[in-house]
Image 1 (cartoon, rainbow, N blue to C red):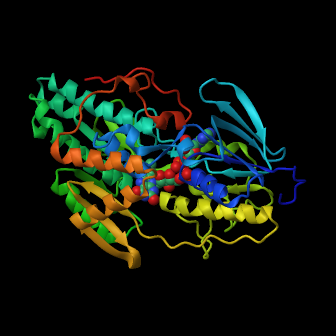
Image 2: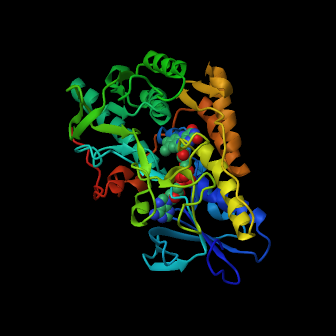
Image 3: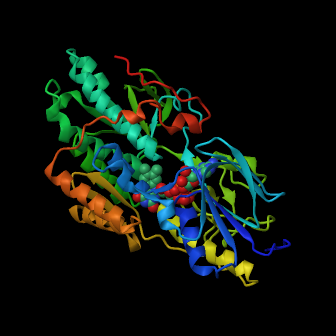
Length: 449
Ligand SMILES: Cc1cc2nc3c(=O)[nH]c(=O)nc-3n(C[C@H](O)[C@H](O)[C@H](O)COP(=O)(O)OP(=O)(O)OC[C@H]3O[C@@H](n4cnc5c(N)ncnc54)[C@H](O)[C@@H]3O)c2cc1C
């Protein structure tokens, strides 16, 4: 394939089982004739995570299992390996991986490799931040954060001193993009929904602060969306700080660039991601941020047989500017990459990726949302919220998952959020931010008064 002496049956290896990787595999299954090529997908989880619903998992509105779809149920002809990709040797055309469960190290050769390893949380090397913050990128992150919020309530309920209660119940969300505003909105909903179970607490004990380094919320989207989100969240009690970034963090809170301090025990970090660190090992061309530089047809120039898409790749639009790293894009890039890969396999020409975004949406809780519609029009309030829910429910893979989420949403209208603490997460009480930064995660939960 593509300049290489092809074996009888070429092997295509896909790295990563997220939106991009699975959509490549699904399309390959449809396009490849029986026996035309073998396809293997290596992923560190055996499911695809539906990230747009993650903030609702952290606030207990949705069950953890309902926002993931098993990879094996989505793919029929693809071999799935549950493993962590450690290295990619593009000269020898081999991928080395460690089996997630046994720890055994193995390698597999390929004729074509699709790198779809996504992105991980970045705290930009800010002092004290990675090891203290709660990220919201993986399913485990959402579970850990949910437990943390419940612990805060449990502990604060036992404290007589009002100042101490307020200090415990101050949650700072850093990053005013769509994940940050959705998380802040969900926190308000959670505390409002379960507050009555904690009889020693008053609404005044709870403080939610949203910090955005840029001048407005939802940067990069139409200004009306940020303005609406600001009004809706402040109206529900969220304190919003804009134009002031985080300088550092310590055990008692955050220091902002302006010199302002915010005392808190709980920082939720949704201020940035960076392309997956594994990519560093490969001698492939990368942007300053670490994204793989690919052509408009997803091929890495100079490295025949190497393809990439999704959050880990910088895919140029017709003006040469990379497309944004969103699920919306990844889900469209994957199928075209698959069809280009098959075209190369059959000696045909590839097609460039050209896509105009449908717009972005952010749910703000309390049945309100903001949505950017085609033509840069903005929809706000209940209608936008209804559109958000309908669109994402339809995009969630698998009928059973759709029904489960619809059921969760219906129950949520009738009952308060679930405050049962899931101890299963307490052995690793720190979120992925520390691991992504190469720091050892804390083993045991620490929550000092
Ligand atoms: C909380 C949140 C909310 C979001 N909301 C939206 C939204 O509303 N709309 C939208 O369009 N986008 C949204 N996004 C962005 C969207 O999730 C990403 O753009 C999308 O997931 C990118 O798809 P991907 O396949 O490239 O990466 P991912 O979905 O991150 O998939 C990468 C996969 O690779 C695996 N992996 C990584 N490293 C390794 C390794 N070394 N070995 C094996 N496997 C590995 C990961 O476990 C993961 O399964 C949101 C993101 C977050 C975090």
